[in-house]
Picture (cartoon, helix red, strand yellow):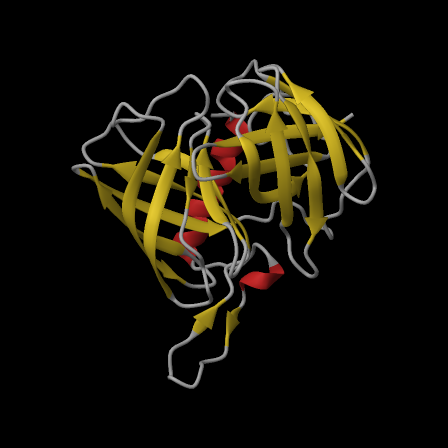
Length: 260
């Protein structure tokens, strides 16, 4: 875990205790609905941590959520946890599915693992639990302002690494309209599209990874923009970064990419 990301998590923990605001402009609590229950649009980027069972401590994560769409969080080992849909309710329940990156297995000895997931959602925090395979976990997220301006797709060469690998490089050539092609160190050819979502801090992503046994095929997910090297691959250098998380029913990956 990079020192920069740890400082983000520490600041967010203090923010939760102080009930301060921040994060995406789309995280504001909406008026009560007809049923009398408040609703909340959790679209945006969140940061926090989770613990599992009697493990050694908490694990820092970043969560990315699109209302009525994709939602996930990931840790710095590259494990991506796909969440049920956040539909605007203050309670979210469903299935959490964990996907390990290439070369890593989860606690069940497999590359995927499923849990029962329950979350309480507000403009200030997302908290809850997940259970399965004789394990119980808890988590807490707070809004993260990853990028203070209006996020955009910057055309050019995006180069970086798969989170958790440290060595598996990824290189994409991205057009101004969001289409891209590229390759990775695992021998996979990548092609696809990323699109901005009006008034949101996240981007939709769809791609096809082809060329070998470790290439996952068609995947979809989300991306976000940052000026910070959150994973520490670039020694904290300031620049334009994109963080991409995508999955399908059998695999997933998270990548940090820097515009060159």
